[in-house]
Amino acid sequence: MISVGLADAVMLCSLAIAIGAYIFVSRREGSYVNILTPSALVGIPAFYLLPLIYIHLFQPEGTAYAYEYIYATLAVQNIAFAYFYIRTNGKLIRLPFRFGRANFWAFSIVCVILAGLVYVPILLEFPQYILNPRQIYAETRTGFGASSFTSATLAFLGVIFVLFSDRSRLRKGLVIAAALVVLSLHGSKGQILEAVFFMLFYFLYVKGKRFSLGAAVIGAAFVSGTVLLLFAASMTLGESPMEVVQSISEYSDYTRNDMLVIDSHLPPQFGRLVLESNTISVIPRVLMPSKPKNFGAFYLAEEFFPERFDADTGAPAFAIGVHYADFGWLAIVYLGCFSALTGWLARISVNRLRITHHPADLILVAFMADVTLFPVGGGGWFFPETLLVVLLVRYISCFGADTVYREHVSARVSGALPSSFSPMRKA
Image (cartoon, rainbow, N blue to C red):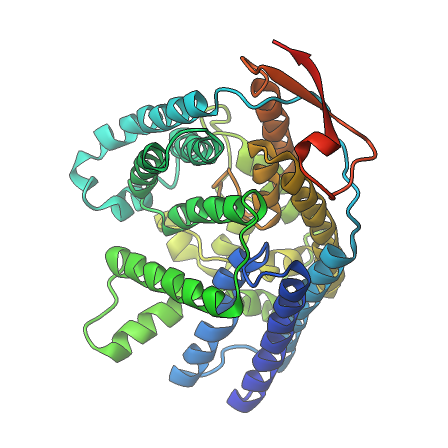
């Protein structure tokens, strides 16, 4: 096993690189709240701060190789994303289909209502847990995906559409509050946080808000406090301060689970788990009754946590471990290239949103920041599915629009919508 001192050094070195990449992007963006903020707010506590607390409360549980490999991979991912995000130029990549700016208010109302109606059958099946949504979350892990995930996606769309509507702040706030109520009934802390991130990107890249370092720190503290409250509402944390710290630190088990995979010398899966995560996970069990439970990351859960897997109480989280199981030590190359691709696509998406001010491009920006419309378990990268929704949103936004726009191939991020797009027709 690795010593505590070496584990500290490895984690702190990787953390310094992550913070450096964040500062690098922030200074270039002119805002310390940016596209890296969601991953920083979630990743820094999960991969660095809570594991540091854990190893000092207990002992490191992995070998030196496992620690060094995981934190070297995290460092490579941060560097690759930041570099390609900043180095990508401002040229706009054109999307097909015209787009308009009509009916966003109506779309938001319809989406929130449908989100509630789709979720009603689950509430009727578990009425005793309405005041304890976390238990609903635990009871509906298998067999309820079609209702649960569809409801969450519609609620997210309701939030996004209402942001772009021309209604008052009060009316927008009421719709957002209704969507958050629906999401809270799902019992997932992450879904509520994702709705907040959708709003954050709207203010950043549509309204052009900029945040100083001080404002960013205050905002991070507020979000962290909110997350702790959500933990307190959904977990048994213990009575003493030490029990609370221990419970929260144990909740962050990504790196420890990854180390189990690395140190187990599991035979390479040659991409099977990644492929299954991106295919099987998106198929509703209603359409595929024979859908296995041990696909993708769940295969690792069955391998290393068989009792929890058999009890169907939720699979422990794996991050780098899934890719290591597939590709062995080459996973660092795969994940580095993937982060570079994501950084490139993220810059393109931000460029587009700054010009179009359209909900379709907000969906793309959020997706590149790992804030997805599809809260589907299994760890897949649902870019094709997200792009399909983006094109659909662009298409339906033309219904009832007085002006429909067409994109110029040569447009650059240099001005407002009228200088980069031309109207095609008047209704």
